[in-house]
Length: 333
Image (cartoon, rainbow, N blue to C red; front, side, top):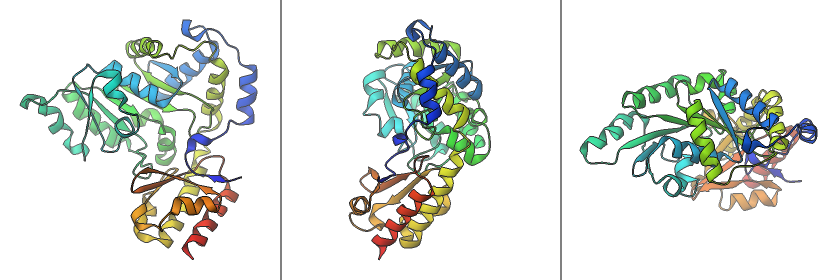
């Protein structure tokens, strides 16, 4: 079997998840009657410190629902320059919410971006942050960093959404609860199907009014599933059993990054790898490295024309890591 580092979405459900799915108590989720979905939503809201939560099929849907609920057409959403909502959601915000994305290079520019509305520029209706920030080696944003952004946005009456697809990785890396990391954000979403290894689903969290609005849009977008408790059961197991082990993925990612940097020092700074994502500059790596690693049964992929990404997860154990390190050695010879 290949060592699959293309994404942490390739994880397979655990035996405990499969058992929970087989035995799940279910009902009609569209009517709010699925007890397992309701349990997952209540658990997520409690862990994130929000009033309510909504279980949805994907992280993209969760982000798009948040954008629709927070914004109004003809306005802007401020985000980081390589944010998932900007770069990797197929222009969904423009099509689904009628807004345009406004990436800024530094969060210190946020006030300036919002104040642009006083100078004939489009109004900003939402700020979207990403924690962890995938393109920068899965960088975890500290609680103080998040709160500074939130305080600035709220000073202008602008809500903040946290794309917390890997918020649990940030929590483990920084040693603080996810609720502390989102602080006063107005909404947050996280994925169950990445490092937490559930087969499907993400959860959007926020106030009761926000979640009510998101639930209505979820239905409009075709997300009104029925006996969803069968898959929600795996999400409950994920939250209850799979969080602490993320530290193993972080450790293996750092070891791998250190090996890459030892062979090709200009490709990345291993000291910046604190979670499960390793990104390397293709311009500083051997030509065709993705295909050459595949020849050694190590799979990875690119996130833009100059960046290769390796994502570590529970299906890559120490043996898999050693195989990946051996492939790097062979290419470097």
